[in-house]
Image 1 (spheres, rainbow, N blue to C red):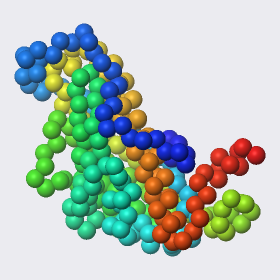
Image 2: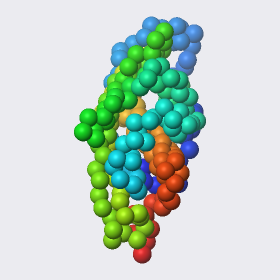
Image 3: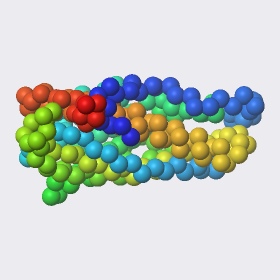
Image 4: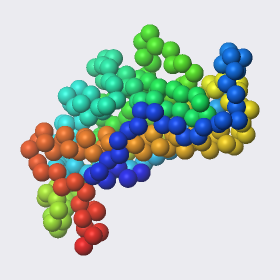
Length: 228
């Protein structure tokens, strides 16, 4: 993923990957019971650069109530508890079948500069036809960059890993398609959602952090250096 790109990509709320004209959606098809569960899984990793000491970055991240909802826009965010949020990602679909993922996330307090984010239930909400299993780890790595003309004297990398699994309860008519086609299309859509969300969220968090602590945000210094 290209989360260091200054020009982040806008999240499309309706993302049709593939139209299947050969499947006629009759009343019988729409009324059929939910078919076999399909699982889509992905592991992702990247980082974002914060041009400040790790202590300053940690203080900002720990106060997520002050920035998370703002930086997550246009996604909808609802506060569930002190460290929990309900996040509505947007509307996505393929094969004429759409979902609007809504997941509960808990941002656990850090231990030795390591943060964990995990899925939690949303009270009173039952996901319609899908289940999400979200596990993310963030680690602060402080690096001095005195020889870097594009940064401040200190920089902290927020390195993150994400293990994401989505189970979709497709209607039976979807399973008339080849299993390999369903799997490849679902995984491509999952990768696209993660890429779009991470690009936008990374840039907005970087920008918000530097504004909040009164530091200039150089955008993408790696890109500038490579152009020289």
